[in-house]
Structures are given as structure tokens and as C-alpha cells.
Length: 259
Ligand code: NAP
Image 1 (cartoon, rainbow, N blue to C red):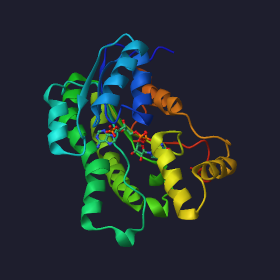
Image 2 (image 1 turned 135 degrees about the vertical axis):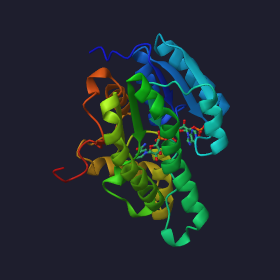
Image 3 (image 1 turned 90 degrees about the vertical axis):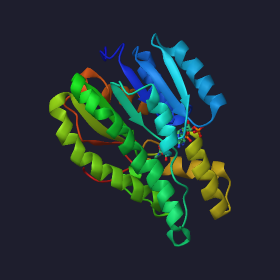
Image 4 (image 1 turned 120 degrees about the horizontal axis):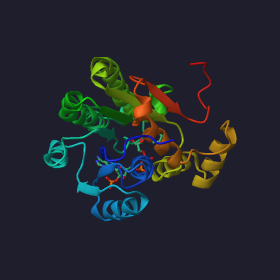
């Protein structure tokens, strides 16, 4: 299927690795011109080089922290005329809410709620003026099925989800859609870190934790980042123009409910 977005311009945040990289790769394969963002220069530059091989479009990169106003200003300085925005940042650390201070909550809100909202604020009106826009926020299955240890993530992402639900309806008539992707367990460095933390808490090895998780999963495997990337590219396509304001769970069927 031709997604009909070749030549469009996309900003993909948190894109040197993991799910963000997979989204950038899938868009590159569709001929989209990319601006990718992460905080660490070396891996980001290497990712940009790989993405140039993956597609026919251009690939620029900006070293920046999307959670900071300075970082966002640097990203947006040369790139406000976007057709596609994929928001993403690292998730907050796991832990016990009794230990979290106000600063911990503010850091989670900055990265996982306010950064996407600020990036949307800077770009959505231009998309509406030009009559086309696709915004995809990478959030978490925790929005639908919260995990106690990930309270910072549960709270911050729920705030973003509520905000987006309201905004999405007001932009649709001008050719813009806003949707959220909710990953379950995808095989990335972030997930390996979560397994390692759990292993330490429970006195097991990370591999034992991983195997136990896979054994309980209905698909008996972890998700591959490319699967989420391709879904993201479809949501950004012309064909997905009537999908708006949705929270799409990509968890291989883990969530046990009907809806
Ligand atoms: P990952 O493998 O750790 O990759 C994160 C990417 O984002 C890296 O490129 C990282 O590069 C960049 N990044 C992190 N913080 C950033 C910031 N503040 N500004 C700019 N770039 C930033 O993580 P992932 O597994 O792809 O997860 C992506 C998001 O999905 C996270 O919020 C995670 O919590 C969420 N999620 C993941 C899963 C899963 O199974 N993997 C499940 C549920 C939710 P730098 O560190 O160099 O900046």
C-alpha cells in the first residue's frame, strides 16, 4: 500500500533508538523527509545515517531534550512547517509513590505530558492552515492498564491523553488528526532496563524476568519496534484521515478486556 506521504515533512522525537527510531524508519521507507531528535549526539547521528540509507527523503537531526523549553526552542527554530509530528521521550523511572517528591512529578509531567502539548501547540495551527497534519503521541499501555510501579508514567500520560481527547475533535475538520499509540512490551533498551530493575527487586536475573513475562504473554513474545513503527506510519498516511482521537493499544492482546 502506498501511504501517499512521500515528500511530507516529519519531526520524530526520541528517535535515536527504540520505538521512536522505528517510527522514523517506517516514515523514511515511505519517502518522508525527517527531522529526528534525541539528547545524545553520537547515537543520534548514527541513526540519521541509517535512516538516510532506509529511504529517499532527507534526514536532519537536532540534539535536544524535548522536556526542556530550550530544547524545544532549538528543535522548532528551523522546523515549524511540519506535516507530521511524532512525540516521544524516555519514560519516568519506576518506584514507590511514597518516595517521590514534587520534583519527580514535575520531571515526569515535563517529559511525558507538557513536552508533547508544547510541540503540538507550536505546530498544529500551521498544519490546519495547510489542510493536512498527522500527530502521533507515543504513550503507554499503562494509560489503559496502569502498573503500580509506574505511577509517574500512569499519571503524566493520563494527563496527556485527556488533553489530546479534547483537542483532537477541534482540528479534524481542517485535515489534522491526533492519535496516541499505547505500546505494551516492546523489545527495546527501555524494556531491558525495566526487566533489570524488576530482577534486582526480586533477586532474579533479567533473563529470568524476561522469560517469565514472555511465558505469560498471549503472543508468547515481545513486540518488535518495527511493528509499532509501521502502525505509526499508517496513522500518518492519507488513508488514516478518519482515525482521530484514538488510543491504539499495541500489546499483542495482553489487555484482557473487550474494549
Ligand atoms: P528507549 O529504547 O530507551 O529509546 C528512547 C529514545 O528517546 C532514545 O532515542 C533516547 O535517546 C530518546 N530520548 C529519551 N528521552 C529524551 C528526551 N527527553 N528528549 C529527546 N530524546 C529523548 O525507549 P523506548 O522503549 O523506545 O520507549 C519510548 C517511550 O515509550 C518511553 O516513554 C517509554 O516509557 C514508552 N513505552 C515503552 C514501552 C516498551 O515496551 N518499550 C512500553 C510502554 C511505554 P537519548 O537518551 O539520547 O535522548
